[in-house]
Image (cartoon, rainbow, N blue to C red; front, top):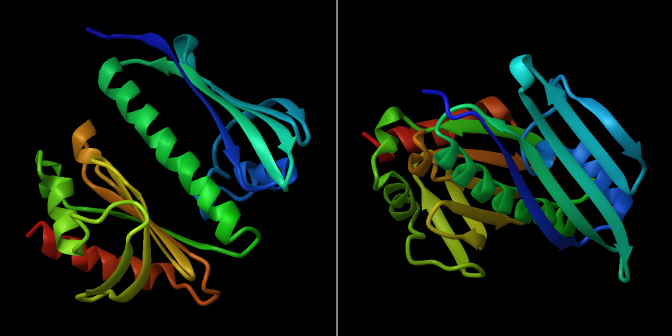
Length: 230
């Protein structure tokens, strides 16, 4: 039985960047903080630079997915963002809504980290998925223990030496039961406990060093994840 219902996720937050910089980040700059969206077949139904953007995808039988960004300038080069993600989930509505809501919090936090620490820098984006064995209830905890950050809270300094990956020196910029963010001087590492939402644990690397190699990054981290879930 299909559970087809509309949903709406609304977030109001402040970001450390002007509306113009936020607009750039959510249009052309998504690989720097989320993932590439340049291949999305969306239509800009509202495009009032730099204050109001609505991007929408429509499909059969009334399906749609829509993102709205309303931006207002604040003092100090900051912006207020009113964000609305709406659309239709066709199956597993509760699980999809829970996952989308929690991902939204993490992505918008990462957007703020990008604007504060790396705005305007070129990025090399890499997406790496863990093996299917990561889908167990303790899958994300296993990864955090392997990283050595299972007891680290947001703001904690980290010095990691990971087999096949090398040394990471930075801080935990986000930590909860489903997501983990590590930020170094030249990269952001995002870890997604999607085992809670019926999928493998995943991660992304946003490399701002200027000499990033996506294939090498995927090989190194993929090998590490294979070892974690062997």
